[in-house]
Length: 324
Length: 178
Image (tube, rainbow over all chains, first blue to last red):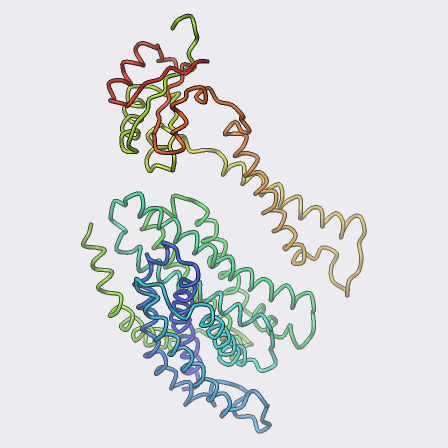
């Protein structure tokens, strides 16, 4: 049961970050406008609509947190990391997100009006604290002030890749018109921007901790860079950053729906490995221990998420396929 | 004509689609030294005049490589060869701390190469162009679309080019003095 809950936490964070990223990007669109936003609007709205289901899926974590988080059974109660405060904060995050989702949903449609700047500030605070609670606190010693930003950039990347995949997949066998190609080019460029932002924050954290070389900080990386855990780490660096980075430099990739959809799918896949590498070494510092329950948790949370997402995005996808 | 040499022929069109069609026809007829002038970017026009894939990207890549390698080697030279300094027991060749400067110089030199190669390949700065001599050309920045055939084109002979352009039904065809 403990092993399943650990896998469940990773899977839950993976799928939740796509939904939260959609919410953040929808509010960002309110501030910036742009044809890319109009293009991915149906996908953004569908991503936001998964949030109520994702709020319910948090319940197993709330119930089983004593088995997941090493600080939970502690007799010595910390000011920040203790069960009642943790649950209270989680409730607050979901109130903030669901309220923002309700407010921002029109912005994800044709009318780009919504909470915008103020909403983004609230959203960033909630995601930052949630990332510390649900991810970083699996290693209670660890602390990093940039961790929230890494998760925010990662959420943006996940959501953007998911939206790009949703929009490009129906177009994959179609001859594209000039304006459609230009929009694809924008989507590819923005995915490149999110990719670089995420890599930049990840590298910053590592560079600062490496430079400081302080025992209580490096423990996070010592668990993740040794005893087999360095292999998924290198894989994420190679295929989560360098490969899509160089591919997205080429205009031919950005202007072909099939290529862009494939690339977005690869980015989404490596995002899971990245989160696995971020969370799991806290539980298994001695060696990676892949397990069938990792797959089970990924598929079960993913099934609920996808059902909720596709129900909302389906009509938009089909209408695009038909115009071929 | 009249003893005066011609730099090229300028044809004036009213609509963007017309100039795209005219450019396609001219390119199809074998003209290669042609140019088009419009008040705003017109879709498909650059393809129609046979605009080649430019090599700015190659210049930027070269600039980025020069900047990145230069930035890295500069730090390597300073921290390892010229003035090795023990900082908290870290190796002299502490490559992680070299990355930010390497990255910044990659971007800096790459973008300088981008601007420089863009200017160079476009023949800029260029204060004057023969088409400026034609009074009708002023409307190229307002509401008219122009196609320009250069006399330097091997296919160009003035009478033939003029009748070819007239066949495209322009508002007017003007000889641009050299």
